[in-house]
Image 1 (cartoon, one colour):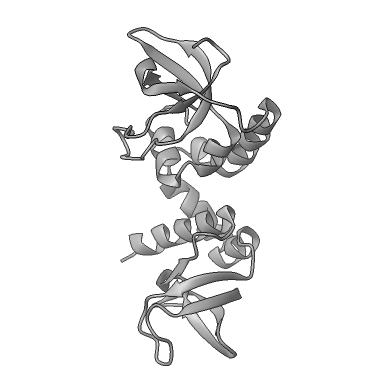
Image 2 (cartoon, rainbow, N blue to C red):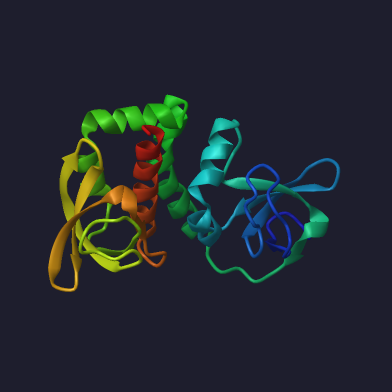
Length: 205
């Protein structure tokens, strides 16, 4: 293997800092380091699949989340699934989202900025409506594990936080966003925005 080769991380590898499973993550060899370590630059698909928790951990630890250091024995050559230009686009998209965290020095500062802007405004802009979610609360008339379709932000409640305009069949309900789990097949930006709000909401209680 040489610099520029496309490589895949072998199954069974886990990031020691975050516990993220690295099976199937692909990148290009950027450089060889000491002690059999290889620095790989993630491909665009891997960048899109990096969990928020991993990126946040890297930023707070002063590390580069766009690349990864791993021993060469844990890599194998594979076929490229994108072009370098795709990586540039993916890096730009991630930068637009995460530069705030790097600039403000932590998640708390980002949440504070969003709070000043208004979570309703942030969510309205960040979420791709409508989206499907599973309800896990105890609102009268809606069963736990019901699949709901979320159409927009409705209002804000002092106790339940942001309420969403949701439909179960033909009936409309106003359900707390903190009690909704977004379908995993939905738009990644929607998943990230809801996860960020939930983290903020849970920090209040």
